[in-house]
Image (cartoon, rainbow over all chains, first blue to last red; front, side, top):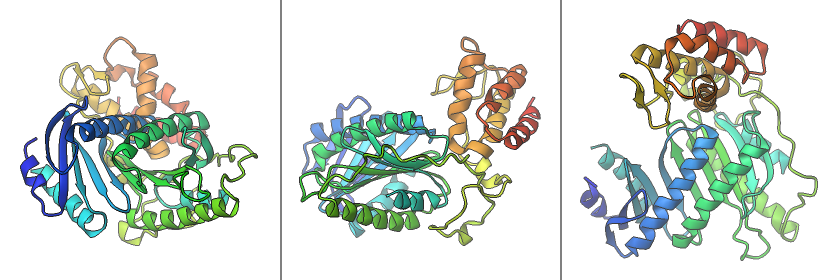
Length: 105
Length: 266
């Protein structure tokens, strides 16, 4: 993925993973089981895309998953699925904004 | 519980609110007539499949916000099943592009707190013995032409909003990507014969979206599957397409308006 290094180096990011649509790992960084995470991201996005298709909401763009100790944003970029982890709250909001900018360029 | 779901559905941009269990079975819902219980069951099962995989990385997830090209799906955990008496349920809110995300976040937090309180007070599983809550059979109102700055998130607007089209809504996010060119196949598997046919198809979709919102594309796809299952759509098929699409409009006045606008696309 073009800007993976940029995204992985955001100070708020604890881990980042890129996989293809079948779940195969392409790149990863940080303290994470990249292979497991890549597969989870692709699989969950496939199911969510199906939900969106049923509801007539158009193509899936991204999903943000937030818990008390961890937050993750998963974005679809063509045939690649990028998952980025950080702490929840302010750090995660910053990650989402920066990701928006990074993926547009 | 009906009141809680109704409050969510009353928000501008919200088209449905669903409570489902860990198997994806819909336990209660409030939704526009576009979304029947069978469809919502399929959606809930897809959501639960996604959530089950998410839990492998984030067991303690609380919220999932999914962004689509033409709307959002907001999912909230109503309990993990392992904590106190809270059953493992999810609350999903289906919204289109009109949704004010900040206000929706507040409304959802309130709804989740109230629902959890009901479950706690009821010693676990709430009483769904009355069956799935009846759906409000209201057609999706055409979005009112309200400037963004004056939108109030939690508004008790009647489902039967004023008629009239919102150019901002109908012109936005209703693009058939991949259309155009000669016999090009879009990612959705629909082909248009040429650029003029593609434009006519887009115009019909936009006209339909004034009444049914984001479901317009789905209905068009289904209709094309009946009209031209084995050949590309062409402009000459617009009248046949309009006849098919009118069947999705319960209100005769909406159907008349749609027909007038769509037939200009020929």
